[in-house]
Length: 249
Image 1 (tube, rainbow, N blue to C red):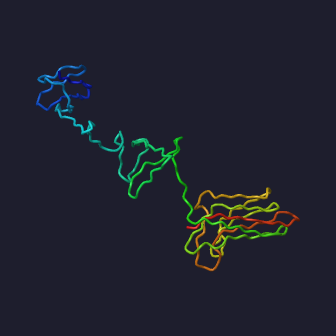
Image 2 (image 1 turned 180 degrees about the vertical axis):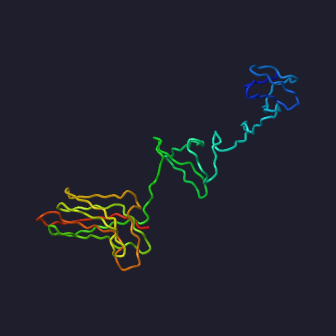
Image 3 (image 1 turned 135 degrees about the horizontal axis):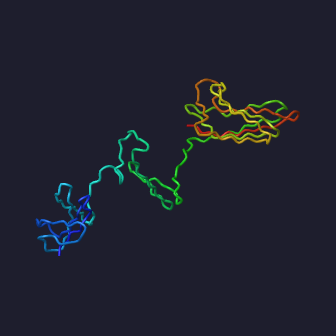
């Protein structure tokens, strides 16, 4: 016995189920289950009525999956043109999902697309920019007189490279003042970082990798990083130390 499964009469959507395309004229019934006029067998194919009252079949693939046409991206059609404007509070946004892949991460091949990864606690995984050529320079000067100063420099930045300061550790056997400087072609930059230390140590990290940098210059002067340390003790000489961490790229 053939049946019609009634849909919402307000949107005029009615699904028909039939086992053959026999040209039968179906009589949709809203809000109830009833017989289809002129049909004798159980219905299998699915059809729907458009707003103009015309019927058309819905098709499935070989696996029984309903074939549809999707317009736009996401369930709400939230597509936009590349480099196009976005209006907050007006334009829609499609939520993004991420993938937990902790055990045997599958690497993507050249030209492939991939799903971004997250941790099991749903934290998006972001890798910090790797150093191209990490450098460490340790400089020291002994017996700096009370009230005197010492200038500690890194070696020259390599030809064709730019040095990016990652950090510097300064220490002394007495209270001191340290001034971190950039030097280009022997000339000191105009924005030093100054630190007064009574605890005999200073561990400085810039806000970002490219915040303090020096490019190689073809001139004869120094291109690098410098720390000037002043002995603040009134009578005692001091040993001073500086360790620079930077990257060249």
